Image (cartoon, rainbow, N blue to C red; front, side):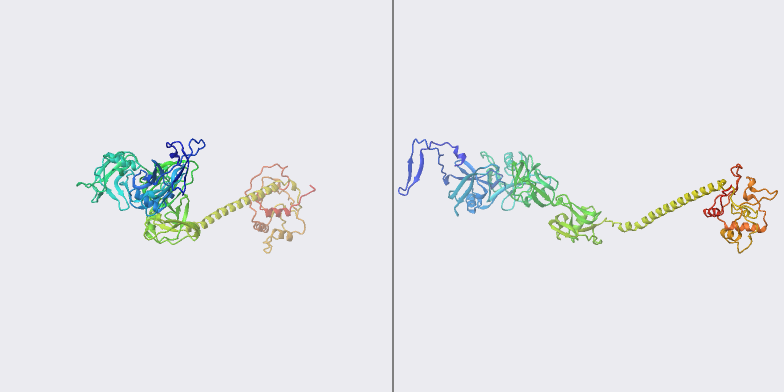
Length: 638
């Protein structure tokens, strides 16, 4: 027996059992008065004639959750118990709502189990509830909603910028929506309707011209004792216009603001509170996308599960609602998945180059992905994409550039009727393909060729710099080597004390310490043209039969340069004949590499330079110095 029925007042148990026997045709009563062993609960019997059906109070007429009233207590019917067509027919007839239309399950099971009608078996072709047998049990089932043919709902259609709690009042049914007449409306009727809509209290209402359309219904709550909803105030479905055919514009306090957590995608929010995913489809998703100005819905899916309970709304829409706040709304605390939606306007596009290149789409995971097919033939869609890229119109004069294949999951499926490329986006299983390309006005062809051409001049310039550095380094090293050699020669020339007594006399003519005409014997035929071009070594071989003395004997009265340190070799005139002078010229010509500098008088002591004097010269080439060494022999005796 249901727990709520157990609390009803009851008399002491007087009968232990009740049996029926075929012999008597009547019940056999076994009385057991005063028994203290009877601890059973009293028996409960409900007759079908005592059951009544009702719909929960809502904004709708002939649509909602169905309940059974038994002994004054209400028990909701589980959605499974409403699956039978016969049961639906009986309930719609019992509620005077016409014929059955359908049963719907909007909201998830209740968080805590309650005594509910888990089965309701009704006889076919029977329109009375007395033909039905209910089963009541404690369950946390989902409570079903029944929609009958006489279903009606009042909906506010707002103007641009209006919310879900203001607008022109329409009545929706299985037919076309019709304007509601303003006749008879006061603040009392407005208060009840605003409450039914889930908004705040009444704010104001106006009468407006219906633009030639007919109006429907006459409402008045005057004389109605505690109306449960606006339908308790319906006097007639005919508009009592009385010559005034005006439509009703109603504005309530408060509002339901629907939004998405990330602009045109993310979790669905009502007044910044999340919404459960239960029973959400693309129909509801389209509604939230249109309401937020994000176009149509691309996808609807469960958000990541919540580990803790969260306060959220349950939302169920029948279809005529323009805004999410106009649907059936129930608030509670749940530990269930929430709903998320992606609208088409959430898609962003990009290209690999400015105003052109391969097309990329920002996917729901905020990652840029390439798309295919390679070319889009719809010119309107191409122009729209270029506008989204802030690049004016599309161009068709640039051929395909890329040939590389990549993994592609996003696809642009555009028919000739599409004008917005965002509605072309679809998903698919990943394939290998060449990404789509587009080129718009403002696209500038990359200067890849010029970059390639710059490599040669840059390389040449770098090579030239390296070459200049190498040449400079070469001459620097050469200069250092020459300076080192000259320095050594000068040291050798100055340090002549080691060679004071070098050489021997050749006919007493002079010294061969330097390659000078004054140091050669006079009997060498210098004017011989055949011998004039001979090298120094050849002259030495031909003119010397024996070792030549390095000094000549001084004639009486003759002043030798060695005796006067102020006299340079270049200043001493040769005493030889013209032949000898000519011979000196040949020697000078043969050794044109030897550069003779201007002589400077050297003030040196006789002790330091008592031996052979060295003529003054600027530079002495290494080869000549080596030649001189061939004819210098140190006198070990002196």
